[in-house]
Length: 130
Image 1 (cartoon, rainbow, N blue to C red):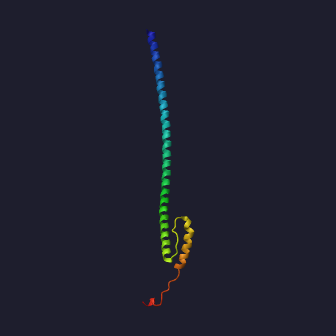
Image 2 (tube, rainbow, N blue to C red):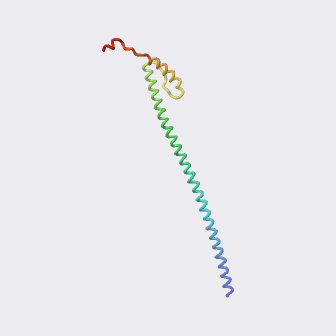
Image 3 (cartoon, one colour):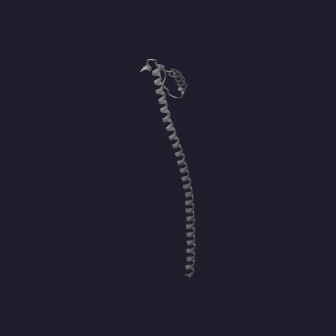
C-alpha cells in the first residue's frame, strides 16, 4: 500500500510539473502575442499619423487651389466685363473670354482699344470760359 501511495504521489508530481510547464508555455505564447500586437498597433498608429499628415497637406493645397480658382474666376469675369465695356464704347464686336486660348485675342483687343482710349481730350475754348 505504501508503494502504491508513493507511486501515486510521484505520478501527481509529474502531472503537476507537466501542467505548470503547459501553463508556462501558454503564458509565453500569450506574452509573445501581446508583443506582436503592440508592434502592429504601433505600426498602425504611425501609418495613421502619416496618412493624417498627408491629408492635411493635400487639404491645405486644395484650399490654396480653391482660392486661386476663385481669384482667377473673378479676374476672368472682370476681364469679360472690361471687354464688354470696350465693345460697347468702341463698337468693336468680340467674343467673351472662355479660357487661356483667348489670351492673344485679349491682348490684341486691349492694344487696339487702348489706342482709341489714349487719345488726348482737348477742351474747346468755350468750355474754359465757364
